[in-house]
Length: 292
Image (cartoon, rainbow, N blue to C red; front, side):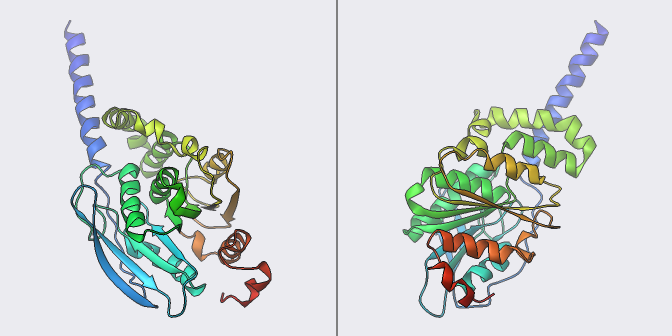
């Protein structure tokens, strides 16, 4: 009987600890950077979020006429500044670039229990404000949010760019926890995911990227670092196979980690070719005239 009580007490402590950890991992870490846009006409705005809070937004208008708008969504723990380097590339090609910080990131308003569903809500807030079809670009957790937003708002998305992606949310989070700490991941990860799925009433499984990919119809560009240790490149190949109706391209950035794909030599040609193929840059023969 004593052994049973001891076991029950340890199980209760373990359950309580993992419940607290399930909350903590959705609050931290936060690693904002500072890299404001240095081109065009910069509008620094705040939009009302769905929970009554606010989202900080940059819209950068090109000096000349605009080819259209691209909306860029950062990854977990970062902020709108994190996407400035990528935005600068599209700005050279004449696009209006829009970057925002998800709630609880950067200087957007606080929000408890952030997740990719809330990332999607914030993307949708900006989409509704822009009120025009856009190119949508998401990185890491932002790619999960972008995929959800694209499924729910197909008429607002011309092209979809997903960088540092994953196919199955549970597998991706477990790999991330183990990458951060093998002991933490193996000992606490499965129970943390149990609490998350319970709290979100099964949406963790229903909103997994591979399942959502089947409903995507607009062209998709997947971008992944060959040496990504957080989300291995096999995740991108797995997700690519999940798209059944959308035309999909995959750029694997040689030697790049999780966040460095856009700095590799092949990135600009791959993006340029994808844009030209789907009519966002004009005829392919004009590509050589675009600034590198």
